[in-house]
Amino acid sequence: MEELALEGGQPVRKNLLPYGKQWLDENDRAAVLSVLESDFITQGPMIPRFEEAVATYVGAKFAVAFCNGTAALHAACFAAEIGNGDEVITTPITFLASSNCVLYQGGTPVFADIKPDTYNIDPVSIESKITSRTKAIIAVDFTGQPVEVNEIHRIARDHNLLVIQDAAHSLGAKYSDKKVGSLADMTMFSFHPVKHITTGEGGVITTDSQRLYEKLLLFRNHGMTRNQDIIMRNEGPWYYEMHELGYNYRMTDLQAALGLSQLNRLDDFVERRREIAMKYQNSFIEMPGIQIPYQHPQSNSSWHLYVIRFKKEAFDKNRRDIFAALRAENIGVNVHYIPVYRQPYYQQIGYEQTHCVEAESYYEEAITLPLFPRMTNEDVQDVVRAVKKIYDAYLRTNIRFS
Ligand SMILES: *Cc1c(COP(=O)(O)O)cnc(C)c1O
Image (cartoon, rainbow, N blue to C red; front, side, top):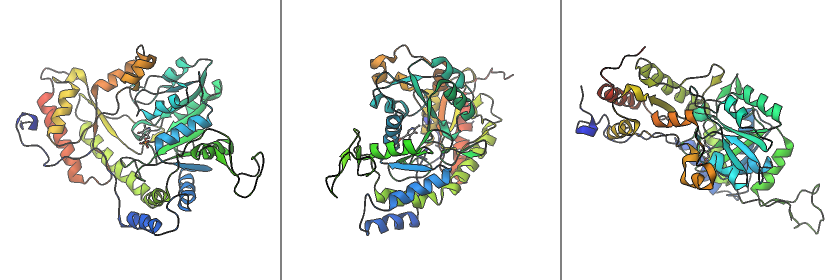
């Protein structure tokens, strides 16, 4: 057996392989430079072009770009008219933004449990959390695998709820052959550098609703309008009115140009992510004790993350030790995510009784392996070798798998 790097052996890699990373090329740089040399570096022509391209790609009528995905989610909660006392059901296994956006609007996030196989929000748990104050569901396509859209829509119809899809992980993914972005009342995509395409920081909401679209535009720009059809007076050509308390959540033209250029390579990026994920699946499927990501038959994931679970009962060491051993091999593993209600802030504002059984069990065992399009096949092999090395060292000797 090879000696683990953690115990003084040779690490599998000389330098750290990160879990995610952007891929920029000559065209991306040229696109940004051309905006730098133009008249508008913000509020110019690139924003509507990028928005139209995103809307077309996902098959939605409208897209509104924001300075980041979190701002986009905040705007979606505003457009959904979330306010004091309103409850919004979401998952605890997500990035903080998916529930913070509800708090920004004075609403109350309510955490439903996840499914033990997909790790996405469980429709049965959603139904059990509905009260007369429930207004919306924020469903997160965790790791890039779409949530069970049909079930969630049925619940939303039955209880008159709005569905916001947090698709930060699932640009390019499909559910029953329909692209994510055209499946919910509003869908959010993030363009942070670890996501499928990047604008540095950036986000977008897609929707088919003219009414929601107009609210999103208003919110992005201080609640200000010059629209002749809705202003109350007109004092002259300079005149504008503020109708809502909005923010400055605008994207710049530099970012939009980068996004437009990156969008050209999105399908290649997703294809490469799927290829790497399949290599992982094939490598780990024969390793009992490791739970590989289950894929729902109706979903076609775009694989933002690849998460495996080291089943507690199968190993001598816990997740913390396994994580440290992988890092010592220079594999940039990560954990996505700490259940949101465990955060000190959430504990202080009333979530100390919240406990989602499946989310907790997931959190104890999950490790995210590196996955990004620019990874070479050798990088993938390094990850597989490191996992096998640690598996051989830490697997319980007397374990029997049924
Ligand atoms: C990345 C991400 C967001 C948005 O993040 P920004 O960094 O603000 O663009 C929201 N939800 C999830 C699940 C994410 O992964």
